[in-house]
Length: 75
Image 1: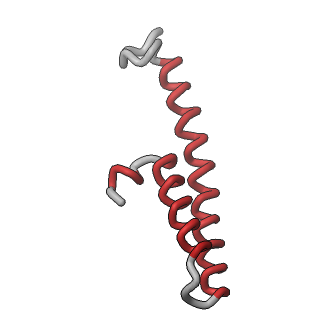
Image 2: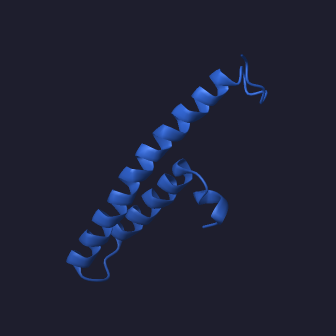
């Protein structure tokens, strides 16, 4: 897992999905510890989903305000 993979909320979600899948399919360790781990990762994933949604909305707003993303504000 590289830092680039988790620079965005979407990348973090993909990484979390892989980690949750690994924990769910693991047969080692206490079932309660694995369940707690999945719950913890899922709570992080929920926050990442919210953040991903906000990232998309913000990018759309910035594009609309900047008139297509040229970096110039219109008066």
